[in-house]
Image (cartoon, rainbow, N blue to C red):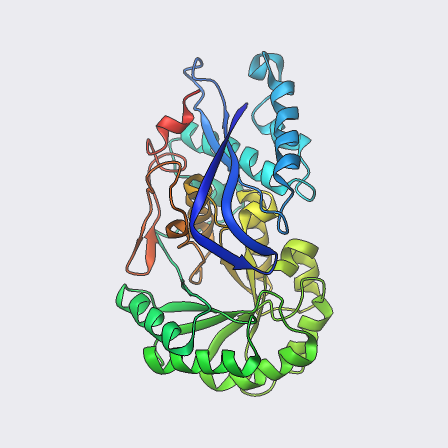
Amino acid sequence: MRHRSFALDLTRPLGTANGEIRRREGFVITVGSERDDSTAVGLGEATPLPGWTESYEACETALDGLDELDEGGGRDEGHSRESLTAGLDAESTPAARHGVALAVADAAARDADRSLASHVAEEAGIDADPAAAVPVNATIGDGTPSEAAAEAERAVAAGFDCLKLKVGAREVNEDVERVRAVREAVGEGVALRADANGAWDRETARRALDALAPFDLAYVEQPLPADDVDGLAALRADGRDPGVPVAADESVGRHGIEAVVDADAADAVILKPMALGGPDRALAAALRAWSAGVDPVVTTTIDAVVARTAAVHVAAAVPDVSPCGLATGSLLDEDLAPDPCPVTDGAVRVPTGPGLAGGAFDELRRP
C-alpha cells in the first residue's frame, strides 16, 4: 500500500455548521502491485474533514502505519489487500479507513472485471442490478429570497428536479420567505429540501417546521444539533398534519445508523461514505435504513473526484435511491483528474468500466 498527499482549493469559501471550508486536503491511496499481472491496482481517497472525520494529521498517521506494515512485504509477506482495513478503526479514523477500503474494493472489482457498484452490491447481498444513473439534488445557497429564487430557476433549467436550500443561518421568518420565494419560482413539481445544519434548538425547530409546512418540503435536514437524537424523535412524534419530515445527517455520523433508526428519529438519513468509514459501511447503513422504512440519501463531504465517483457507485447500489448529494465537483477550483460521471439533466451516469471507472484514473494509479 502507498499513499501520497494532495490539496485542492474551493472555488469560494463554503460555510458549514463546523466552520468555513476553503481547501480540501487528503491522500490518494493505492494497493496491489503493478508487477503482479494477476492483481489489479486499487485506488482510494482519504479526505478528512474535522467535525465529520478525524483530523488530517490523524489520518496521515493511520496511513503511515499501514505503509510501514506493508513496506517490502505486501502480499508476499502475507499482508493481503483485505487485511489492510483490519488495522483501521472506522470510528476514530473513518477517512483513513474509507481510503483503504475503497482501494481494496476497487482492486477486487477490477480483478473481477466488473464495476464497483456491482462489486459492493454483491458483497452486501443485494440481488438487484445497480442503477445506470443516480438522480442528484442541486444546492441553493444562503442568499436573499430573490437570489435564492433565481438560483433555483437556473438549477431547474439545467435539469434538476430536486433542490436543497441552506437554512438556519438567519431568523426563521427570513428562511421562510426564502423557501416561499423558491417554491413560487419553481412550482409544485420540484422537490424541495432544507438543511439547517443543526442550527436550531427544540423550540425554534418546532416553530420553523410549522412555518415551513405549507411549502411541501421533502424534509428538513438536521434541524437540531447532532447530539440531540431524542429531540429529533420528539420533533417527529409531535409532528403536525401536514407535517415536515425530518432527516438526520450529523447525528448519523456522531451516533451511528442504529441509534438513529432505533430512536425512530428520522424519515431520511444522509450518509457520507467518507465520514462513515468506507463505501462498504455506507452501503450497509443505507440498507439498514431502507429496511426500516427510512430513506437513505448518499452525499459527499466535498471530496475529490475519486471519492465522489465511489459515492456514485454506493448510491447506485441502493434500491430505488432518492436524489443524492453528489453534485459537488463544481465546488472545487481544480481536481485530481477529469470527472468520469459529470452531472447531466439532474443525474449522474454510473461508470460501467471495471472498478471505479475503467481506465479513467490510470494516471493516479501509477507510483
